[in-house]
Each structure stands twice: as structure tokens, then as C-alpha cells.
Length: 128
Image (cartoon, rainbow, N blue to C red; front, side, top):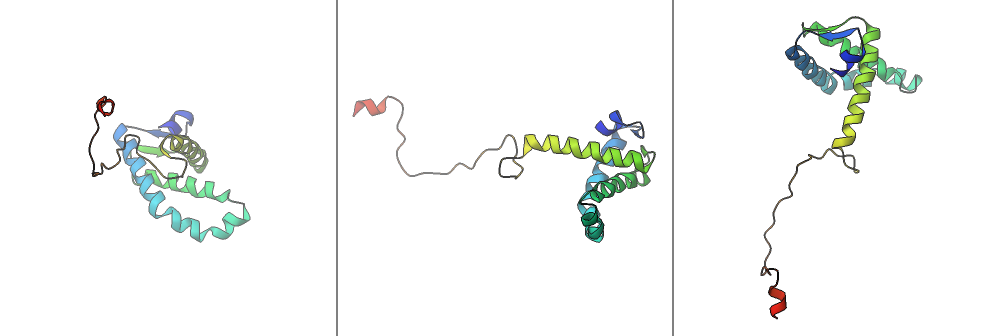
């Protein structure tokens, strides 16, 4: 949604199309992108990692072939859209990742463990 707001070459017809595009892009990034990164490793090393931006743009360019209500006009739009998506994703991950690098749910509760012993109520320790 953010990429379509900033770039004229990326647009969607409906919220369902946008949701479908996001889901498909997530699936492509999870399964196809690692294979492409492995196959293009020499090129990635030669360009000092900048070719990864081209791979990300290619992933975004493939989405409209499967999601008809999502449109990407050219590889240039996909390239810049992938950069915008990456920056937004990086920014949002700052709110969900801890200092250890792992993702933490914002409203998590630790497990309650039973302990052996007596519960002391406030004011009870003064009686002794």
C-alpha cells in the first residue's frame, strides 16, 4: 500500500487484490527468493549485494501475473517499489524485534509457574 502511494507505476484495484498481492509476495519471498539468491550469488558478490535489489524487484514484478487486480507497470517501478517495501519493512521490524534480534509478540505473557511456599499478604510480615 505504501509503495503504491509513493510510486505511480504500482497500483491496485481493490483491497482484496492488495491483500492477495501481499500474501503472494510473502510466499515468493519465502520459497522462490532463497533459490534465486543462491543461483545469483556470484553476481551478488560482484555487485557487493546490490543485485539483491534487482531480485527483490523481480519478485514484485511477478506478482501481477497471478493477482489480476494488482498492477506493476515496469521493472523500474518494481525495483523502486521493492526498495520502498524494504525500507517500510525494516522500519516496522524495529517495533517488533527485541535487542536479541528475535521477533517478540507485543502482548506476550510468560508461563505461570507453581512454586512451593506460603503466600505472605501485605501487612502480615509486621505481625511477626
